Length: 283
Image 1 (cartoon, rainbow, N blue to C red):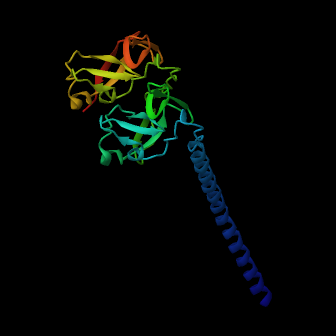
Image 2 (image 1 turned 30 degrees about the horizontal axis):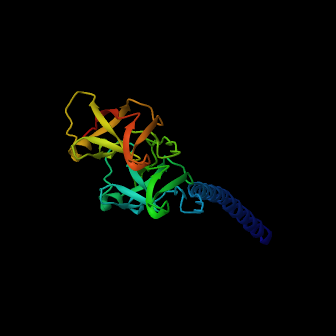
Image 3 (image 1 turned 180 degrees about the horizontal axis):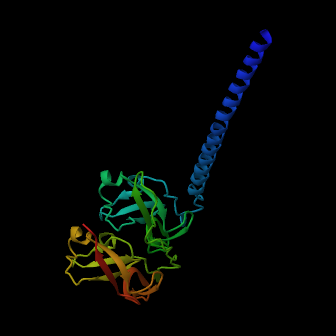
């Protein structure tokens, strides 16, 4: 009788052990999966966070890694109502773009807090070279910049919690070797209200060094666009431009009576205007 009880007890113990072993396997597998996911997330975070080189002098700076930053934490809104970020004595213009072409208002701090940066057209550590204005005796000013090799960085943003989408306008724009040369920007995919600025004459233009380019806006359906109305511009997205990004623009500067050049008075430039083809956003 005792042997039968012992045998039954042993069988029950064995069955329980097998049951527990069967339950443990999926838990171990789940733990392994969770660990791999965690490692992948950590690896992605490492890949997206790049150490930025320190500036060796006032002439040389390196583009920051903006990926993962809240849009409201990037730079500041200047008096021109555009977004800028400081790099030594100079600044880079900040242009926000969205995958669907909707307008991201750089002056609306509360709205910007809803967005996070997930891509940028200039890679982190892209070199920025500054040239400084000079006094009459030839010595440089410490904080008056004459020209910069890069003038803006385009940041792709998304609503917090959304998946990454294909980022528009991510063409890396070539650096300018001097004040006489500028590379044309990529406007395709930008909201029209994020292209340049509205001039005193009520037309659309964009700065290129000491010069500027006039924007000729062409709607696909022939409708009229109020170029001096920011809200009207925000209804459109750029779908084409008449010249390729990184087309080089050369400039000549006016000269003083003694033959020396003015620092910021452009007398002529190789490109004066650009056609932008736009489409109306779905309301």
